[in-house]
Length: 182
Image 1 (cartoon, rainbow, N blue to C red):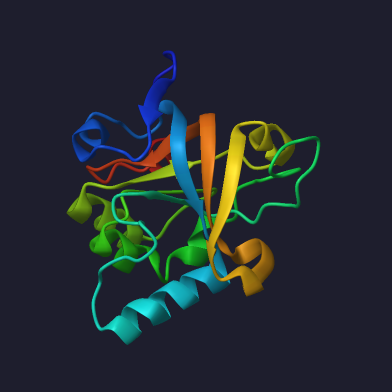
Image 2 (image 1 turned 90 degrees about the vertical axis):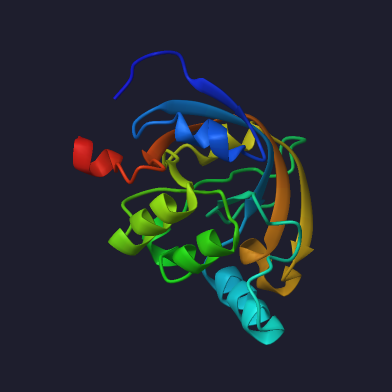
């Protein structure tokens, strides 16, 4: 695990840039990030099934999904708070979404071996975001647009813009898992 300055990464992520990341690396993300949680994942998988393909809608190909349910706007910002949800709750969908083109996911906690293998197979990463810092993380969000599933409220699919959003590499493209290294 590195104690160096955080790596600055621009979203959407370039797969060749991901190859240089190692589990435990601190990173700052800037650019578009998409929020989606449990119910939204179910809807997205239903859309893929209905289309009988794995072509991601809503411009999600090559993007990063943040497992978060933001609170309403506050303090002149798009959200009052936005914190990570336990990532393992989305393990039922993550391998298929990585296979379809998702380059990264962001959440908190450990992931299944199936997700680790999907990261390796697709040269994708899982970023860990610190829980309990939702008010701070909201300061890193400059804009938000709801793209789909508005009826799901906090679990709707949103495209947010982030600046210097702090994360750590949880699983790298080689399958190294920060929770196994620690």
